[in-house]
Image 1 (cartoon, rainbow, N blue to C red):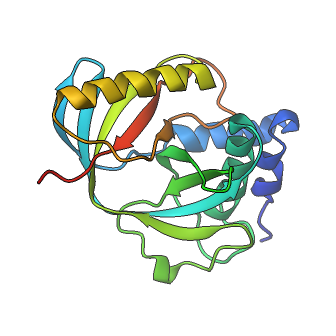
Image 2 (image 1 turned 135 degrees about the horizontal axis):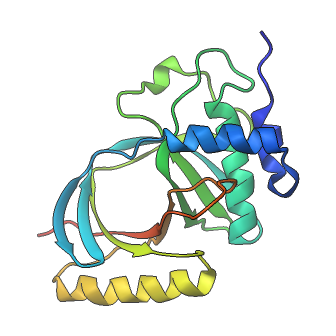
Length: 200
């Protein structure tokens, strides 16, 4: 049976059909977050230890919102089976977004734990497999609509807290989203991740 072109539907976030939005919403509600170890939890702050995680990534350009919407659509198309053989791959939240060196945004989906990239079809144009290493990550929640100003304020707040923990943050700031760009209703809090330098 021919696969539905969800990637093309999702890329046009502003004009997506209601049926497509409902499909993505139901998929996102069943998404699982990766397993991690909580090392420190202090109010709105936390330090987590994540295992190595396989990803599928794309670099998109324009504003953060546009890059996130376009990247989500492109990656979701692959996860749902568009243009490849095999079964759908479960969506794992959060969706990660970080500034790319050339001025774009790197958008990444985490592949479910235990997924072997060797058993997957090669991604299409503009998509690549990647991997995040085992690492400690400092986290702060970003409630409400995640604007650029709010993200910047929360990142500065998290940076000050990290210094008080006698830890050193890396240069990379990562936005972590727990809602698809199409999810209706109240949004879950987004988060900011700041990977930390190893101790010692």
